[in-house]
Picture (spheres, rainbow, N blue to C red):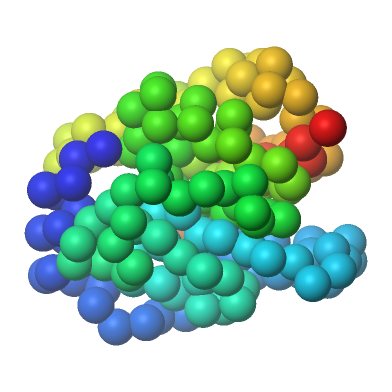
Length: 173
């Protein structure tokens, strides 16, 4: 992950809590329709915390200028019923991504930029996600795919509407 980019980003922009992302609204609705009793949720890569607060989650971010600073490698994800990861998978190294799949023991809610469509600006490094590869990684780590969609209109921001992948998966123990 490009820690320096995100430190600068959150120091200069988005320091106030804004409305939740469309993905957080979607996930909260999904959780209302599919209740998980006393769900303990973690938002990894929580940025300024807008989704974390909306979901009533605990949040961690590697940027010291963002939310609760902690390296993902320092968080034991096994203690959480739901791991929420919006726009973070494509910013992690392969090793950090694998750690999330290995440690998660409940539900995993992912929104990430797809490798389809228009390539985003080059302001920072991203590993765009191939949806077939993501599904394979999840299934190889004993996740059952509960919800999957890929397309435009999921995460519009200003003049940008990237192709995104949304997945909700449950670890099969």
